[in-house]
Length: 259
Image (cartoon, rainbow, N blue to C red; front, side, top):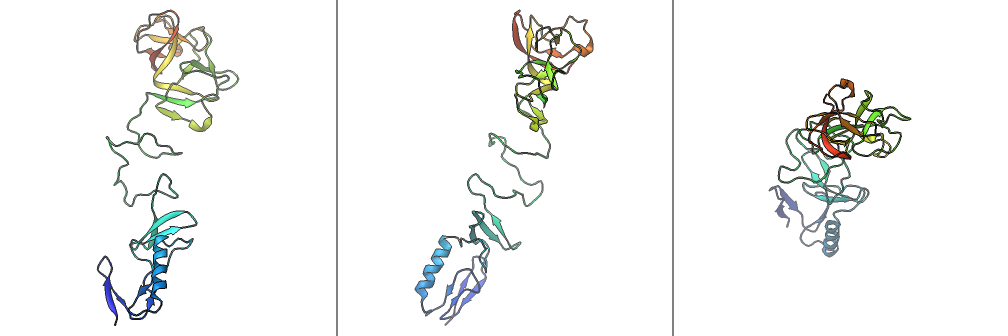
């Protein structure tokens, strides 16, 4: 005599006597008095243990069924809503696109549950904050430069250290930790250092400087100095954000690009 069972959603299933029915699911449903039922039970157990491991999806799927794709080494779950196998994310590796099912509906982390770093090639969106303070772009240098060096366009490549006091060719300052990095794939920090073009950045300065004082290039390579107040606007690198009382070369915070 046939017997009835139900799926988790309540749908009824009829299992006929003496049969190992594989027409409804990926495993055999065993009717009463089925010959060789022990073999079928063992086969069902192995299939479920392996999550139907194969390079092809199992037939006669049911909602929520798991399948291990042995070709892509991924675990998938069957979604009867769109008749598809959806890959599950396990561990730290994703083998496909990560796409939300609804536009503008979800958030990655929150104010108290943040990721330490995120790496990608291209971001499309709106930036609302930056950890660091300057906008910088990579330029090819004719020699290795250090953070805080004052540079001009020229030399054998694109930029070089300034060497002339109050030069009107001054261009920017080698950034310490850019807040926004432009042209990031142009090279590395040795060949193509980030040059701060706007914002707050440490700069090498010789001699005393007062907070708010304008800065110009000195005759020491890559080093700024306080402006006399009579220098051309094109010679101004930026303005000091702190005092410096010593005569030797040191670093101070400055805002670059402000005349």
